[in-house]
Image (cartoon, rainbow, N blue to C red; front, side, top):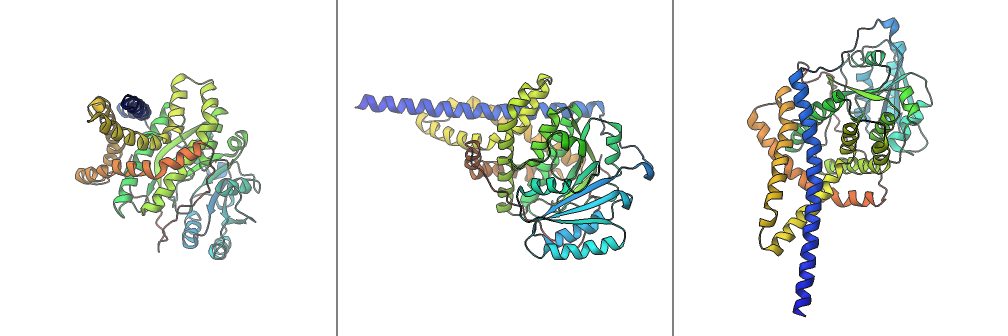
Length: 440
């Protein structure tokens, strides 16, 4: 009997070790993907790479643009959004603002009053209402496209406030590159300094745009359209099959399908488009869960087509690393549990010491490589403030690993999730001026 117990204990320890090493291998693979991106960023920095520059185009030659703004139950934010985009420097007869309004509260009535004011000043505003919210944001955008025929479609979430010259500095890029399917602008966040959570998110998002998005674009690798602050070529959307609502990340899904059809995106750092990040942990967790589940849904459908695409090996590997990186969260949660159990069974962490040291070293390199250069370039503050904020990021990710990891595994098993909108804070004024207009 004692021998049987020892055998079972040994088998359990073997399984715990196997799980710990498997999770560690996943984390290392994800870390290597980020280190490649950081290496590319440093290479671009050394060679002085610059974003594509939009040519100056006479008004008479500017194309017609449709600007879609999907909204749901956010009255003041919607009013502010309409007033802001009406100030865009683009010929009024060549810009159609399309408010995709699925609201069930006072938003619709208040938005229509603002739309009437703007129409009286010559702005073209279509207030589009649907009978239901089928397909959520993807469904609203797809429905809106059936109502017009403009060749370029700009997209903004209701809380984003583009500067007046945004379209002038982005749309003409399509005229210089016939295979550019979309242009993504860098986003930044007006409520960056609200609390420790918004500062942590700002640090992460600056790194996402300035290091990951920009480096991937300059390298010719797959990078995602972020769902806001960007412009699509209508021909690209149609060629890729239009918007699909099977995933909670409809923007990533369309990006991948467009790339598989031979289109590519362009990324521009200037001008930045100010928006908001969640300022409460509950809304932040909900937003991250939606993104994680959406990425998993896209990965399940597109990893094989990407691997079979006639692309260079590096482009395929980096594309898969982009769409599959959300597996980090369940891998981190399960791995931490396995390491703790294994240490108790072994009597110490000694069997895992080398592996843990590797993971900690990679974590430090990735965290510094992704967040420090943008922090310095955008002049976000003192280095000591950076250190405090950066120190809050690993615990935040561990929290997300345990808060969202199980939901991600359920999504992998086929569980469907409902789109839950991230609430926006309503402010008293509209500020369309980027906070760091001098940053390059």
